Amino acid sequence: MNEESETMTVTVSGVFDVQRSVLDPCDLGDGAQAMHMRFDKRFHGPLDATGVVHMLAVGTPVEGSAAYVAVERISGSLDGLDGSFLTQHSGTMDRGAPTLALTVVPDSGTGALAGLTGRMAIEIEADGTHRYSFEYAIPAV
Image 1 (cartoon, helix red, strand yellow):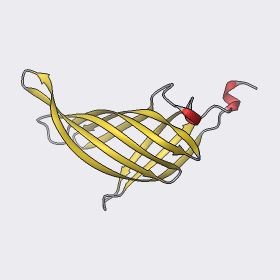
Image 2 (tube, rainbow, N blue to C red):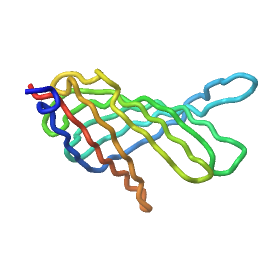
Image 3 (cartoon, one colour):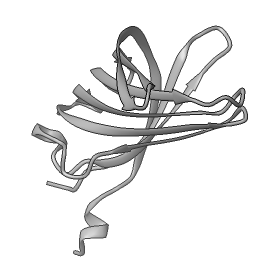
Image 4 (cartoon, rainbow, N blue to C red):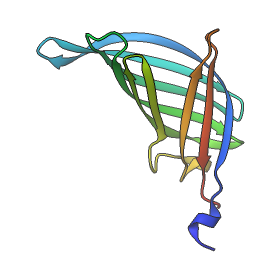
């Protein structure tokens, strides 16, 4: 059996709660600064976990244009498998048009989540509800 046939991609979705803390800005030189924030998340559903995110964000003089990068540690249970993993966020607003890449950091899974790969999408509804969709794979044991 080859490695590809031993893994299956699964997509799960749910909601999460988030609390934001603004931290001291990050000096980028010549008076430029990046906003530094910490987010504490609580995921519900097939991903039953907590997350801690550190984000750096910058804006531009053009309204609707900005970017952020972040790293997140997620710890808990994914479809009943316990462990933790890291994610990398890269978000851009191009004159109001958003893009987001949120991927699992390679080889960051621990416990039953060792070998985890995947990507996540986040949607914030008009009422403020935060939703996630997580497409992932874990090698068969």
